[in-house]
Length: 226
Image (cartoon, rainbow, N blue to C red; front, side, top):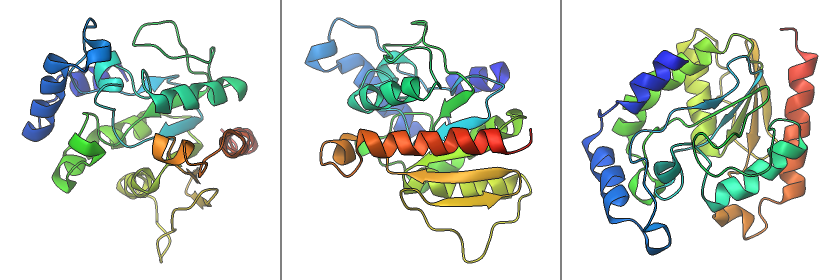
């Protein structure tokens, strides 16, 4: 994981993403004007012995791109980490920035796209450039049993990753939905609506719904032989 992290941090494969993440880090929004931004690709984070992987979309421009850690420093993280802490998957309920003492427990957190994209919309070529990193992460997680996909982009990325690692994907391909669940090879893929404000502020995703997803994930991780 250390080698993957080093490669991710140094990555400059996508000129559009590099330009955007660095411009955001230079110009800054008013509320973070006095802070130093990370401004690079953001690696995965967590327990290398994890049985559960949490997969998002990409770092937020003023979230992970600022703090250096996925789901950290933005509204999505503020919604996510209390639920992870309650589920026993994190040692605390707040996540401020890289190196703040937060530890994930039996959990690895990452994104298919490692640099913040404009409007949270990576191009297919950018998704493809990042894809080998996700494959390497999943391959390195020897005890991994459950992948929680936050949103359809993460769901599709997980299926593609399993296929790249030799798993046979059912046809027709399993469709994303909140609570959708499918066993593929040694992994179970579990779907959840993304913890974006678009979902949490509108009530499409509630804390109770997210808690139920993490209860199911931990139950599946414990039920499957490792």
